[in-house]
Length: 313
Ligand SMILES: Nc1ncnc2c1ncn2[C@@H]1O[C@H](COP(=O)(O)OP(=O)(O)OP(=O)(O)O)[C@@H](O)[C@H]1O
Ligand SMILES: N[C@@H](CCO)C(=O)O
Image 1 (cartoon, rainbow, N blue to C red):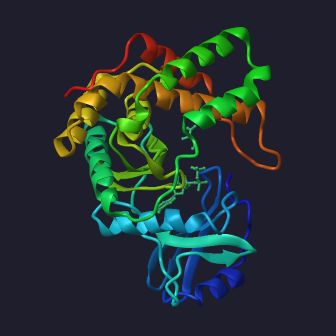
Image 2: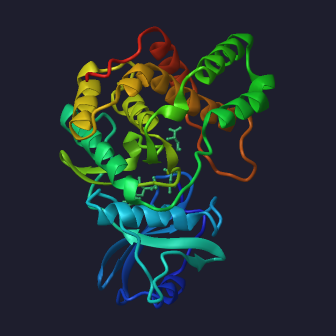
């Protein structure tokens, strides 16, 4: 359940007076999602999603909302934030940051098919190329130095085998040439639950709240690690091929990227193994975060260390 902040009809109607969206028709809390409070909101003018941000500060949100607007305006299917009469995407509700975005007409997919994987590969490449003209900048706060700090924090809670594996992987990642890979705006969390589909048509990507500047190849690895994995955490090479070929039809990988592809898969697995481990051993106080299983990404990392996925260039 993810309605942490409950709003009344009167409060919402009052909030909507800042926008040019007509009067409220109906609203309903959304049960999916973990981090924020989300409501579906229908008004005379259309259908929207209201997000009340439970974790982010007012200062950090404009970057994310501006990227969503920029991508939507550059033909990348994304929910466009709605500006109020003064042109602001960000507002205040219950003393928390809040924003309205377009409601996309689609559903999440749990086990994507090959066609949906190809759509995602192509869309990610277009997202990366479009981002070259975006003038905001945000450093990646889940990079290798974050991984090292996180390992140091959680090390006392880990068994010897995991400690040795993580130490070895961190040393391997330190030796990679991340600085010379092509970089730009990345989504950084494009898992299957962050894309909504109507059949095989992508309605849009959501949850851009980890977006940052980082190597494009890493973003592709985050996607492949999640989209091409079956329920037993085995990789389906047809789905890997579909993502990689569709991506490279729009933006072919450079030689350096091809060489670093195994390292990128491992870095993406390491990042989500560590964040899930940290959520498990050091749960955030007061946060209602549902713990996602860290072992999935331990398994993914072990897979890629012995048998990295091909780049299909
Ligand atoms: N723009 C949108 N259009 C349609 N549905 C949306 C939109 N944004 C969110 N949703 C719906 O709301 C659900 C929760 O959104 P989201 O995944 O962003 O949750 P969250 O709590 O904000 O983030 P997280 O997934 O990181 O916990 C989604 O699964 C989706 O069903
Ligand atoms: N996609 C992340 C959670 C949200 O960032 C995970 O599956 O661990």
